[in-house]
Length: 264
Picture (spheres, one colour):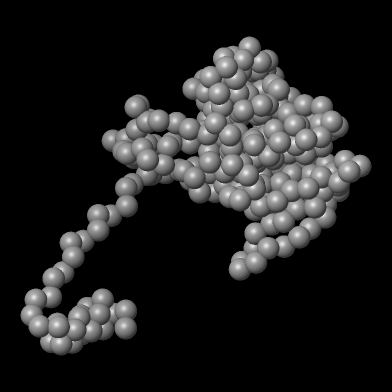
């Protein structure tokens, strides 16, 4: 069994985000970049499968992004992935998630992967299209928002618990398949210093646009979403204080909520 994990790099959620002067992107200088938290669950699940099952031959981590995204890829390798694929080209930076799915599908379709894991969404743009789109392009089943995964003893199928509105759903799916990981699936271990050093020696295949057969044709007719402008959320207006005794203050509050805020 071969396992593939899709890794994405995003700004740290504690980072102070600033918008570039032209509004076309965020200011990336000095911004701490980390592994997408939902992808951490996918990485750990893949490594646990390898540790528990003798039929898992390898775990490969794949990332699309500039050279700096290699840091996130090395984190996956330090946690326990065996090798990596880094799709690194300026042409890839302009792709939306559907086009990125077409790019990844072109790279992995002949890789013989039995299970593909990816976080349910990215925390920066908050989009969850990449996993389902990749499954569709590879023509394999997809289980979203997975919180528990059990591979059958024969390695031909799995049972997954997935989060739905107000409950959990249990599904049985044949392999090969793709799952998107949700919080609760598992927590990624902290990579030790020795493993971080070992990760530097693990093989990483760097691919450019010219290395992906049919890249231009595959992405030209799919997607095409472009970000026209970024802007920070509006500042919260200052609070309004209502002086006086509790009873008249309460009446004034109700009046304001009804007549000005129009929420009651």
